[in-house]
Length: 242
Image (cartoon, rainbow, N blue to C red):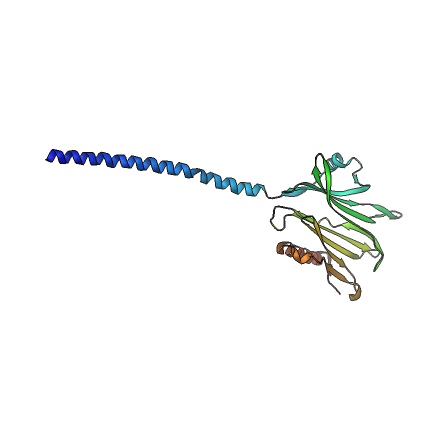
């Protein structure tokens, strides 16, 4: 009887050990199935980072010559600066062109300017948007118009993976006073301009926003507000209606 009980006990021990091995194998397979999750998550994380737009870079004169010829002109106008950036839509070049016209003897200034955005397309370029402007004579006669490149930017302002260019330019009068300022935001290939006319008198001072400006994402509108505050502070501008 005692030997029978001992045999049963030994058999129970063997079964228990077998169950422990089975559980260990099951747990090992369980972990093997789930281990890749720890590797897949970083892949998704870094993949999302990779989709963020690259910062815009200023093209060198050598790069500009290779693309637009030694004259560094585009559509007959000298290229002042050229930027390149990449986002989810492709690779873009933005050209800032100023005509460098001679107004008076020994006095060179710009009478017109143009900004154009080109996207690489089958070995060539396709135009996405364009901005053009020139001197005006109201309320005072202007003598010079230029890109304010230090205030222009090429960043993703709303985090959607697409660059939102902000182009800033101004003009001044024969008294060297700033007369007009334009801040043009391009969002999804649509232009949203802010137009300002500086004047010491209330009646000739103006500030207007594009009718659809309020439809822009809040982050973009906040950026423009801060940019205008910066222009007021650094350039002593009013940027106000009336």
